[in-house]
Image 1: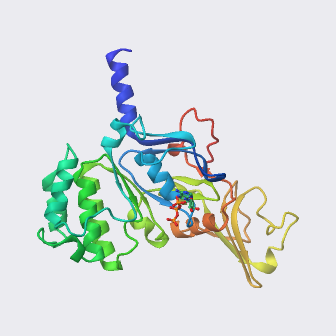
Image 2: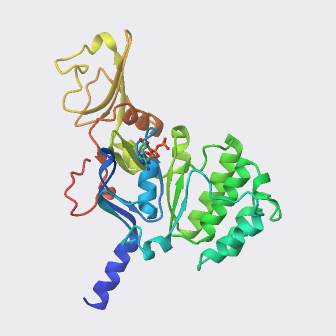
Length: 322
Ligand SMILES: Nc1ncnc2c1ncn2[C@@H]1O[C@H](COP(=O)(O)OP(=O)(O)OP(=O)(O)O)[C@@H](O)[C@H]1O
């Protein structure tokens, strides 16, 4: 390989933070995750959503190298998850924050420094101080929000290229959540860090994430840039008496479109679709919110997956739905 080709290969690898191919995990006889294939471009903040038990933690643990896959593989900046080169570039913050209550905040950061060769003490200390947290305070005496900030400081102090966060905001009140999110996003934007975070806070996803993965029913249902995902969907509504149920059980006029979800009552019929062409005039058609799209896919976990072009893994043999 020439020097130029090798440089291009490195550049390409650095453009993809995460590449997951045919990933599956079985516990006993039960598959919780099957055939997940996607690419996460570097520098994105990606939300990982799905119902309870959909396999979000399992996926994060596999990427962090804490759990093996039953099928397929995950690569972090081109390196196989679990290996030393991949682990060096990843920080994982599990749901149960790994902090010792008896340690002071300063001792917690010192432990981070001793365990991580690339540790950035200034970054970690600044992140903690910006939350008005005393470095001499005992971790066990901190509020939930303060503990989250300390745990995030430890995760960021490692100077990772990819941060994996398992429901980091679940136990925070809305104000602290907003402050913590702003601090986190400021830090990741400045350093070009890629973030993959699981969350049930569907209504707040669009303030946090510019990329989305949705797992449900054992598989990946949505993957892609948030704006792109929204732009390929339409939210339709029509008077129920003008769109009677057709032969396939769907309201008439939706043939030829990919229908994700429909709701019907005596007066109104609504649908979330991926249009396959122009929509009949009887329907009022508007752009959906991200929350509406996510809720529709969560409700209809067997709807056709949408893997957007920049989430597509080249050569993985998976259909790209536009
Ligand atoms: N070590 C294990 N042994 C057996 N089953 C497990 C194990 N870990 C997880 N599971 C099961 O796998 C499924 C997926 O769990 P996982 O924690 O990955 O889901 P999740 O999407 O993160 O859920 P939640 O939103 O509730 O946190 C669940 O049904 C869970 O009970």
